[in-house]
Length: 354
Image (cartoon, rainbow, N blue to C red; front, side):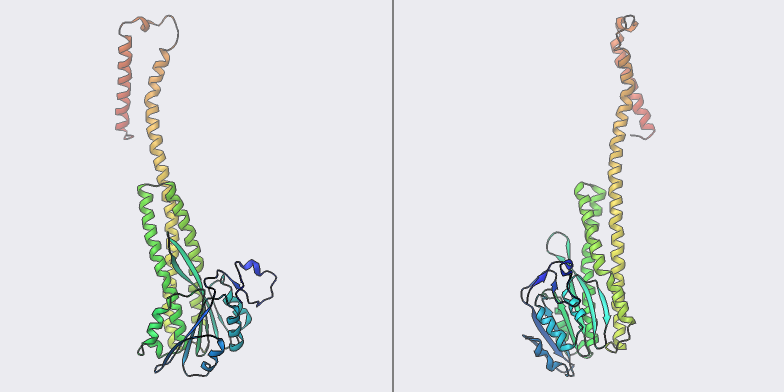
C-alpha cells in the first residue's frame, strides 16, 4: 500500500498507532537489503519479504536490515508483527516530521535522527529522517530514499579486520549515528563559506540582493538548527540509559559522538549569531552610505544658503538701492560669491567635514 499524506494535520482524527506514511515520496517502491556478519562470516543480499528475516533472529551474528523508501506501509507493519514492535513506534517511523529523539523499550531501542545534506542548486539544504531500531542482534535502519550515505560503513563491515565485525549491534548503532552526525559538518562547512562570501558583499557593496541572501540564509540556519541541535540531547539520553543492549565498551564511543553533536550544535549557534551580525553590519553600511549622501547634500546646502541670501536681497524690487546703478556692482557680487564659497570650503576642510 503506497498511500501517503503530505502533512501531519491530514492525520487528524485517526487513532493512535495508525500506520500511514507522512512525508515526501522519494521512491515508489521500498528496497530491503541486509548485511549479516560476525568476525568470521559475511552475507549481503536483497530480500523480498520480512518473513525472510525470521531465521536471522536466533543466529549468532549481527544483522543489519536497511529499508530504503517508506511508502510501502505493509513492510513496516510486517516488521511490527514479526519483531513485536509497538504500534506507536511504527507510526513514528512512517511520520517523517518527527523531532530527533531516543526511546528505550524492553527488548529494543528506537532512535530518530535528521540527516542534513546539501541540495543540488543554489545553497539550500535538505534534512532526511532516519529511524533506527536496535534489537539484541538485529539493527533496522529506515530511510526515506536510497543513497550512498551508509556506503563507507558497509565497506568497513566487508573488511574482516574492522572493529565493527568484532562487536555487536550496539556498536553498529553507534557507527550509524556517528555517520549521520558527521554529515552535518559538510553542511556547516558550506554555511561557513556562504557567510564569508556574504560578509565580503556586505562590507564592499551592500545591495537589496545581499539583504535577501542574508534573510534567506537566516531562515535556513533556523531550519538546520531545529533538525541538528536535538541530536546532542539524543546522544546524551543514550549515554544515560541502562539498557543491556548497549555495552560499556560501546558507551565510550557514544561519548565521542556526543562531542561531535555538541560541536555541531555550538557551531550552528555561532553561525546564527554571525548571520544576525551580518544583518546589523548591512544596516550600518546602508546607514553610513546614507550619511555620506546627506553630508554632501548638507555641504552644498550650506554653501548656497549665503549665496541665495545675497541673491534674494538684490532680487527685491526697491527703487532706491545704490548698488543697482554702480558700474562694478555685478563683478563685485560675483567676487563675493566666489570668496564666500572658497571660504566655506576651506572651513569645512579644516573641520574635516570634506
